[in-house]
Amino acid sequence: MSSPFFSLAGKVAFITGTSRGLGQHFARALAQAGADIAMSSRDASKLDGFRKEIEALGRRTCAVALDVREGASIKAAVAEVERQMGRIDILVNNAGCNIRKPALEVTWEDWNTILDTNLRGTFFTAQAVAPGMIARGYGRIINIGSVTCVAGYAGLAPYGASRGGVKQLTMSLADDWGRHGVTVNCLAPGWFKTAQNAVLYEQKEWVEYLCDRIPLKRPGAADDLAGPVVFLASEESRYVTGQTLLVDGGISTGATRATVAPPKA
Image 1 (tube, rainbow, N blue to C red):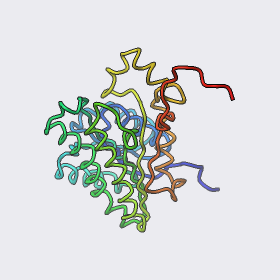
Image 2 (cartoon, rainbow, N blue to C red; image 1 turned 120 degrees about the vertical axis):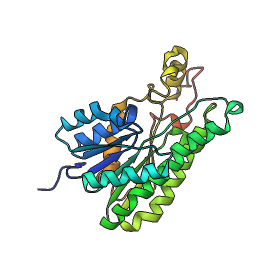
Image 3 (cartoon, rainbow, N blue to C red; image 1 turned 180 degrees about the horizontal axis):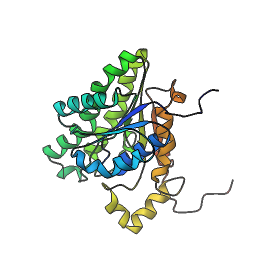
Image 4 (cartoon, rainbow, N blue to C red; image 1 turned 180 degrees about the vertical axis):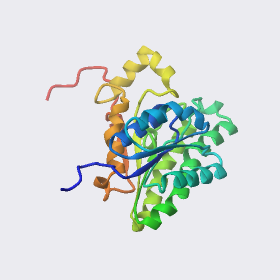
């Protein structure tokens, strides 16, 4: 009998930035699909509770300390995951940050913090994981972007630059490593409530404005990302690489807030 669609049984997934937020949702979805889970945080002790949750699903786990702004930390974390888990079949490059400011107030340090985390960290984590994947002739790399990969928003200049870079990086790595059986794709969420942007969702008028611009009329829920991340991690996405999958309720269509009722057809 053939395996069920989207099964990750027997695979090892490494998800960076899993101390909170979407990283935990990605890890949970992959675990529920059958993958064993390696997780990371700058402080690995913060992962104790989440690790127990994943182990309760019957999955093997490991937790490592990782600061993606430091090259030595990346190399050490990847080596430790490979030592404990045997290999890495799936990488979800999720670790990221944002500093929301008007462009005129962005400092040199703000820029470096965001780009070093979101873009440089994504590249060098993928670079550290790829040799093992190439040697085995198989791998799935999922870089986490955002709707800012394809759209600009005020107050998000360095963040948008970093995510746009992730989109371009994804295409380059897909071309580099595709011949070795490694796919590289970018999963780009739209407006999801996270710890980074929770303050925005406290503003009722802003939420109403946002929902008016989203064709599906609501912000994203974490479960909306489960299917897409499992698809990109699975054998069913074997002929998909170099792509950016927008999971954004349609906001990237460029919809604007309606001020009058649309004319009847």
